[in-house]
Amino acid sequence: MLQPRDDLVSPASVAWDSWELVDPRTVEVTFLAGSAQCEGVSVEVIETEQDVTINLSVGSLPGAGACPAIALTSATRVTLDADLGNRTVRQDAG
Image (tube, rainbow, N blue to C red; front, side, top):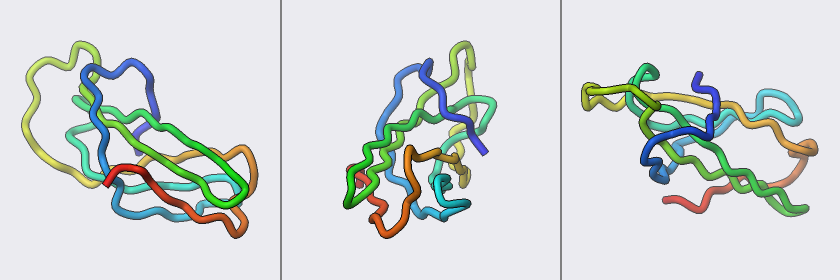
């Protein structure tokens, strides 16, 4: 489980693969990223009455140095301002 951060080096948008509702206000999204020792995730959430847009960016951790080029299934959790309810979960990347 990657914790969202805002200090990533060269973050790039990535499409997430799936999502799961953990509780009424917590969404867990699954995506591909490198090793947790090398890469991190930043999250942008836009909530409206109709939908919740979750956009992810993956980038290198500060000072990570040389890292193997691998892709691992990763996940992060997003806390919403309001219960998801009947809103649609979507992403702009993709």
